[in-house]
Amino acid sequence: MLPAPAPNFARAIVRRTAVIWLMMKLVVTGGAMAGQEAGIEHPLRAALQLAPFAALALAGLVCGLVLLDAGRRNELIFLANMGVGRVVIGALAAGPVLLAEVILGAAL
Amino acid sequence: MLASASLCVYPGSITALVGRNGEGKSTLLKIAAGLLRPDYGVVRFGEHRLTHTRLPDMARRGLFFLPEHSLLCRSLTLGEHLAAIEYHFGGHDVEKAVALLDIGSLLDRAPHQLSGGERRRAELAMAVARGPTCLLADEPFLGIVPKDAEFLTEIFKQLSRDGCAVAITGHEVRSLFDTADDVLWMTAGTTHALGTPARAREHDQFVREYLGFEALR
Image (cartoon, rainbow over all chains, first blue to last red; front, side):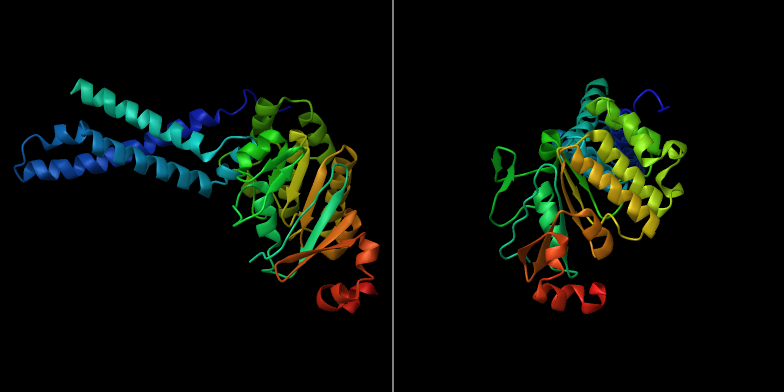
C-alpha cells in the first residue's frame, strides 16, 4: 500500500546541498572570471580551489541555506518528530561541501 | 509571556489547554515539546527531569508534536511521510493509522492537494503511526468542519485509551470539551487547573472571562 522504498531524507538533503553549493560556486566563479578579465592572475583557479577560510565560509553559508529551505518546506519539525535534529541536517549539508572543496583543492 | 505556568499530562488522559489569543498556550506547548527554551523551569518526561529539552530528544523518548501550521513536507506525498515514519520507528501502527484515519485514498497526494480536514487527518495519522507516549497538538481543530472535528475527537480518545498522554490547545470549546478529561485555563501567563469540562463550565471566572454565558446554553 505504501510507496517503497522509504524516502531517504539524507539523500534528499545532500542532493539539495549539491544544487545550492553548485549555484554558489557558479556565483563565486562568475565573480572570479570577471576578475580575470580585469587582469587578476588565475582567479578562476582560485575560485575553484578556495582557501580554508573561504571554503569554511561557503560551507557555513550552504548549511544555513539548506536549513532555511528545510524550514520553509516544513521538514525541520517533521524530522525533529523523528528524532533528527538541526545539527544532523546541518552536518549533512556542510559535510559534502567541505569534502568537495578538499577534493577540488587537491585536484587543481 | 509566561509567569507561572505548568502543564501536566498523564498517560491515558487528555488535557485541553484553553485561553485567549496571546496568553501563551502555544508557547507553553512549545516549551514542553522542546521547541522553545524557558527562562527557568523544568520539563518532566516520565522519570526524567530535563532542563534543556530539544524536540528531537523528546521525540526519541516518545513525544510527538503537532504544530498549528502544517507538519507535512511540501515535497513529499502523504504515503512517503508514512513510509518515513515506518522506516524510523517500524511499521506496526502504520497500516492501523491509515485504516483508522481513513486516508487510504489520499496516500498519493501531495500536501497542497489536501483539504484542511484531510490535512489534519493525515497529520494525526502520522502521530498514530508513530505510536507516541505523549502527543502535544497545537490547535488541531482550527479551520476544520464539525464532522472532521468529531472524527479527530474519536482519534484523540483512541490514542488516550492506548495509554498516550495527550494535550491539545484551541478555541473550539465544544470539540475540546468533548475530547478532554481535564481543562487547563491559561490567563495572564498563569495556568489554572479547572478539572473536568463539566466543572470548568461551573467556574464563574472562567465562564465570565473566557467561555461567555452563550456557551452554557
